Image 1 (tube, rainbow, N blue to C red):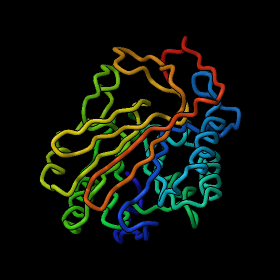
Image 2 (image 1 turned 30 degrees about the vertical axis):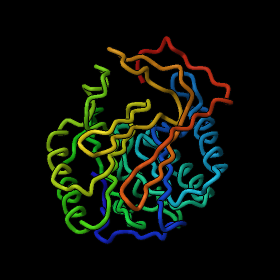
Image 3 (image 1 turned 90 degrees about the vertical axis):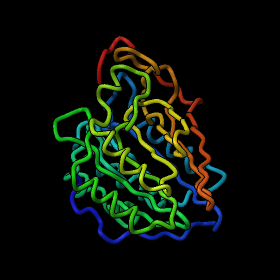
Image 4 (image 1 turned 180 degrees about the vertical axis):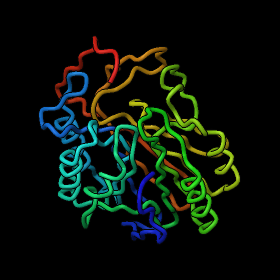
Length: 279
């Protein structure tokens, strides 16, 4: 459970009145050791390549969402590195924890004048809700009662704003057996809540290290590639993918539409050790 869940929403004025622009960076798996590698890939190098691409975007985003597994070893050094790097990017940055993270350590180190602990963001015609689906010592996710109540309170409080709900673990099956076993265990409870609030226009997550994009029941369901190694879509058992590191750019329009695209770092040379059967 993330400490100090904000009771007062954080407000940002978007760069334009008709659209909110966001970037999602997820599953960076940073180590305390700058030479730390995941499946043979240096995660700091790929993360920095992703962020450099974000900074070259034609349209500057209004905020950056970092959606879990930001660290691989949950170390103070990894979070301090991330806090410093995000601060230098000079974008309002909001985060939530994944199964590799330590929420308490994140709360200490991921906080400065550009990296913010708020879990409810009001921006233009939208509210962004960030939930903690991590379960201590487990790979799968679950939303405890406090998180579910927080979600429902936020939706009740702003019925006139479109909502984008963010978490780390996938709340629906993606067609990959091993990943579907370690998704959000109480997805039915989560989905029952958001089904009651038609202003929910999107659900955004990480964890699965691959792109996912589906519109179902009037909601845009989106997952984003890792900023380091990928997982092979549709795999029965653990299998690394061959795709390049990536991130997601989102346009949230004032009429509730979501347009989104995944960018990948195709010009980066990287080597993944496909013989490794876990992470």
